[in-house]
Length: 107
Image (cartoon, rainbow, N blue to C red):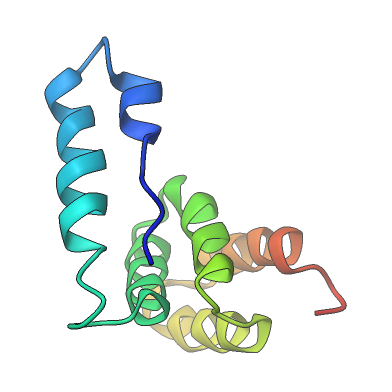
């Protein structure tokens, strides 16, 4: 089950209230909650893949969410390895550094 998202309101609620509402209520509240159509595990794999290819800072937060959603260390390593040839070696190195922090060396 999707955890109630409040990051939008906490970080941008007063500055950009509509964006915060869309983030929390629509993206996470409506789209991510469609678990009958696609599991949180699979949504996380897709989201991490997209963010990795873009090289954006949200990658770290979504890797943490992916781990919570059951994406294993081995799956994450395979995802990054596979995408390295499509997205670029430097982005893969960065993604591996983030994954090492989140998953640790022993998992």
